[in-house]
Amino acid sequence: MRELDEELGIQTKVACLSPLTFASHSYETFHLLMPLYVCRRYEGIPTGREGQAIKWVKPQNLRDYPMPPADEPLIPILQDLLLSP
Image 1 (cartoon, rainbow, N blue to C red):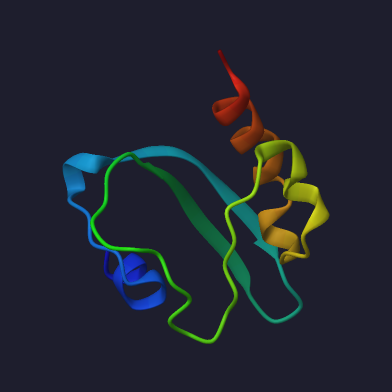
Image 2 (tube, rainbow, N blue to C red):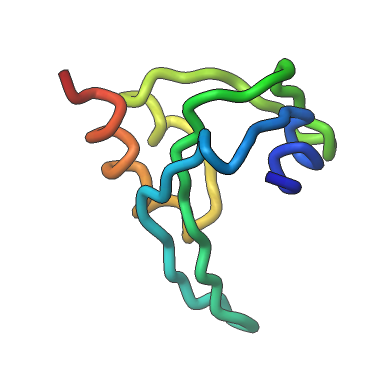
């Protein structure tokens, strides 16, 4: 919740978060274990507060955007979640 506020300027509550999966990736100098949560409700307007550009994109277009290697395995999981009927 702190990261959402720091990086995007949005606020949420624990009850609005549901764990979905996690990413595990070995970089050259460290190993990253990153949980991924679904956030169903939040307050505020998401804005890049650390100089990053943000954009709402369709799930089928997620691979059209550069992202860190650790995030790439999360794409099909997000697409399954967001494209399911």
